[in-house]
Image 1 (spheres, rainbow, N blue to C red):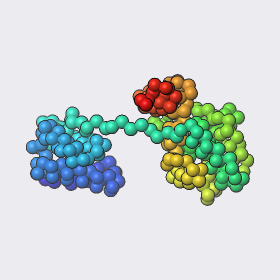
Image 2 (image 1 turned 135 degrees about the vertical axis):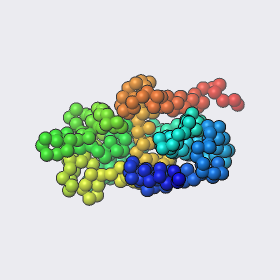
Image 3 (image 1 turned 90 degrees about the horizontal axis):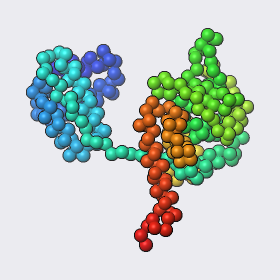
Image 4 (image 1 turned 180 degrees about the horizontal axis):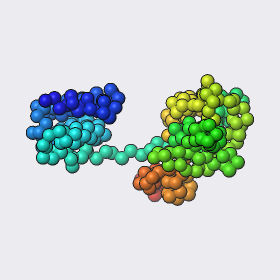
Length: 306
């Protein structure tokens, strides 16, 4: 019996996974069969799977890729155990090699200020006013780009015939309310330059053609998409001469890193970013230490050997 075909069919119809995802599962299971030299799935053991994972690692595959394949194999065996009398799932307990820890990319403070200041030149057109407000808000409040794109000009009440807002601006209070991961809402302060930029944009913002209360609009006067925000920021950073590639998450990282450098309050940064766990926020302490190390190396007379 072709267990793989049945499993893939269930993924496509039962779980309604995309064809692209189903093809990825197919390739990963075909690779497992190739590593084993057969497709008698009941014969594979925990030791076999560990050996295959080690072989993939020795062949140059990344820890992330191996982890994904192990996850796919584990899911297949979990399904197969419900179809047959497997003694155990041979993939359980097999882990991918440890991934190298990569630090988030944040701008230097001077580069961030230069990027924001470049927004103040030649922004008389509504298009530029919208861009300036978006970029200032990203850096001021550390929003995810999806949170930014989902903002409304004000809270919308579903009882008034409008869908309830996922996020909105309260300019008078100087804050935005956003819905982050896990549908968790949080309030984030908005800094002075961002409030000024938002007020300037709201003064010229046209009515949205799609009838929404979207705060930020595309060239067609419909709610802006995260992709458009990303492209606009990239173009602006190139014109401003920023020395690194800039995307919206770089501004979020910069917000967190610069705030932590100034305040040292990790818990406050966690709340402002909307992280469920402090562990996710702790990576910025490494950036903070990296910054302090650079200051030390540049300033201390005994920092470097002569």
